[in-house]
Amino acid sequence: MQPGPRNLITDVAGLSVGNADDARIRTGVTALLGKAPFTCGVHIMGGAPGTRETQLLAPDRLVQQVDALVLSGGSAFGLDAASGVADGLRAMGRGFDVGGQRVPIVPGAILFDLLNGGEKDWRDNPYNALGRHALAAAAPEFALGTAGAGAGATAGAFKGGLGSASAVLENGITIGALVAVNPLGSVTVGDGPHFWAAPWEMAGEFGGLGPARHFDPGFEPRPELQFEARPGQATTIAIVATDAALTQAQATRLATAAHDGMARAIVPAHTPYDGDLVFAAATGARALPDPDFDPLRLGHAGATCLARAIARAVFLATPAPGDTLPTWAARFSSGEKRI
Image (spheres, rainbow, N blue to C red):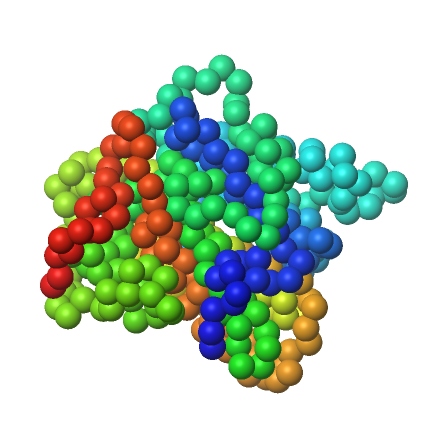
């Protein structure tokens, strides 16, 4: 298993990603678009999710495919980003045909970034427009770190961000992950620079430091975290995508397995305060060479890609005036502390 040529979710042919962000508000939106509708599943493990149209992704629902997926900041306000994407898709003639009317199917998920120092005194909800801009920006190449849905994210003691990674399996199938990283837990071990995801790193994509040699297996929240934590104030939201032909039930199982990547990269993950969620997208371009065991391989590869993408998000975050937290790079890019 090797990274794809871009090491982005868009190594899955037919997918594009667009970012839109607002530096004044310190927030943003990321949209994933397919050239054609794609099969989609979802699995939610966090205790405080914020979602749109996830119920129709159950395998027994009428609609089996979607037009786009949206990740957004803004807490509940950010759900309007998917409406902006849907409006833009409808103008393009995209959507589920209902008696001649086109209804784009655009599930979405949000993270909480309302306490990151940005100006939140908007009169009109900005997320519909951000969604439209993200759709218009969709392309094979896109920014990581402080960008899109990760523009205002925080991750434990550091700025969070937007991450992506990909892998090509030995059977030729490609899988990738896209994630906005805003967890209550930590992506690094103790007070050092080492990422929990280090055992799955490929080609030095987040610093090549390797795993920490020692760590405390217990977890005690920092005093300020115990004081500040409130339900719904954290979340890691992600998409794993593949060019494999999957049923909606198989896509749901892929989303479920990919959650292992969060647990490998964030400690603790899936807390009552997080809204952790994974969408799974399948374009259907490649039949499974081994229908019995390839879904297992995809689940493991999806979890691995997601863990890598989470670390890349924090590794690539960039500083800005007024930040409430430092970036990983600002703290560790010189004189790294090793444990």
